[in-house]
Structure formats: structure tokens, C-alpha cells
Length: 141
Image (tube, rainbow, N blue to C red):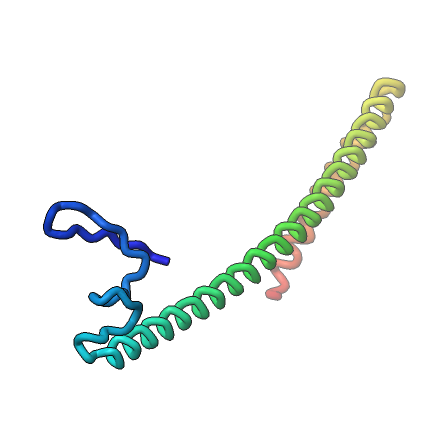
């Protein structure tokens, strides 16, 4: 419940535990003024508004809960994909290291004959690709 401090004329403060307390000390009813129905109606309207706000807040909390669950699922899924990518990069790195090691061994153990063959192969591939690009460019496709 909300508490409201009120100050009486002598400067002393008192705490009221209900903001709907009437001047006669009762809750929601003013017997002396004859406006008991007004206070009851006002209290009922305020109570209904409070219940509506509580319902709206509970709906928002439910939506936020669903959203956080969805975010958590998405994060787990993304982490799984990142782990798979990391594994893929690791296997690629291992494969490249093995290939470079074999090329290094081949260059160290053999004569310049193998190096000549490799250079000629690379030159042939580059010339072939250049020829394919120029031939395809002239065909108009």
C-alpha cells in the first residue's frame, strides 16, 4: 500500500496507510457528508484502473520473457555456428600447414628440376586463364 505523510496545523506529521481514508476515519465512506456512494464509486474506479494496469504490466512482462527466451535461443544457435566455423578454419589451417610442409620438404630434398616444373605449371595456368578470359570476352556473352 502507498503511505502518505500529512502535516497537521501544529507542524506534526502523521502517516496515513490508505490514501482513500475519509475525514471520519473510515475507509471509503464519509458518513457525515453523505457522499459515501461517491467515495465507494471512486475507490472502485481506482481499483479497476489499478487492475487494468497490473494486467497490462503482466502482459508486457510475458512478452519480455518470451523475447529474452528467443534471444537466448538465438545466442545458443549463433554460438554453435561460430564453433562450427572455428572447427572449419582449424581444419583448413591444418591442411595448409601440411601442404606447406610437403612443399618445403620437396624443395629441400630435390634438385631445381622440381622447382622448374612447378614454375612452368603456374605460368601455364596463368596463361590459360588469361586466354579463357579474353576468348570469352570476345564472344560477346
